[in-house]
Amino acid sequence: MKINFLDLKEFNPLKFPEILTAAEAAAAPILTEYVIKEMFNLHAQVSRTVWNIRMFDEEFNREGSGFLICYMDGGKAIAVPKFTISDIDENLKLDLQSIIAGFFIFYNVLDEIHILDVAVAKELQSKGLGSLMLYRIIRSNAKRGIRYYFLEVRASNKIAINLYKKFGFKIFMIRKNYYDDGEDALCMAKEL
Ligand SMILES: CC(C)(COP(=O)(O)OP(=O)(O)OC[C@H]1O[C@@H](n2cnc3c(N)ncnc32)[C@H](O)[C@@H]1OP(=O)(O)O)[C@@H](O)C(=O)NCCC(=O)NCCS
Image 1 (tube, rainbow, N blue to C red):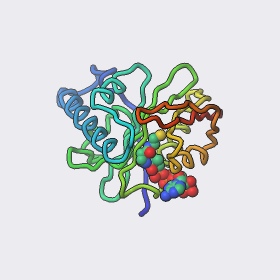
Image 2 (cartoon, protein in one colour):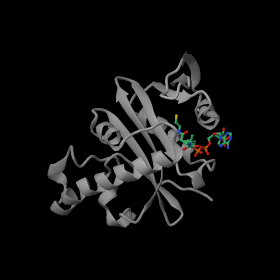
Image 3 (cartoon, rainbow, N blue to C red):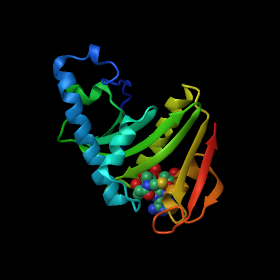
Image 4 (tube, rainbow, N blue to C red):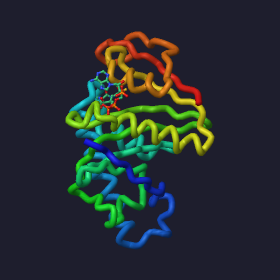
């Protein structure tokens, strides 16, 4: 299956409420709640690390956080950066019937990005969606002068490690017993 991305304009209605119509402003919190629930469900299906729904909420509201979310719509993946106007633009047909395909959660401090969570729906894995999302994050943040990327990954998660290595991430440290079940974390970093 070929996956296309639409380049959507980044927009945060909560930060610019004055330029939203009343209908858009009313739709934003409903959509946010819906999206967070979908991300929580997808994470629970594919990830071995437990996140409760409150953690998604907290990250969503964290200063500097970024969510890249992909929705399947008629066979196309639509990438929706955190709070885009397109979330509530009928032309893009992202509505409560759309199916979440994958997401990245990260946050930005100074010229660094910290990747916190990544998931792709089981049936869509190994088709290039994770790579497309990561490519897009690196490309759009490079324009903002972001040079450093950091993340932790389970030592046994070969697919994720391969994804990061493909983008030039290197292991710089091992955190012993980092996860609740005692598994080690590989700390990986990339410098542009
Ligand atoms: C890790 C994950 C996000 C990767 O997303 P994806 O869309 O499946 O990744 P891609 O298809 O873009 O593949 C990226 C690279 O991973 C590697 N890869 C993909 N599928 C693989 C497989 N079955 N076996 C080994 N390596 C694989 C390849 O190196 C691939 O690059 P290439 O196809 O150019 O060779 C996804 O598998 C996932 O959601 N896993 C469960 C949740 C998880 O582990 N999250 C990571 C937390 S740190």
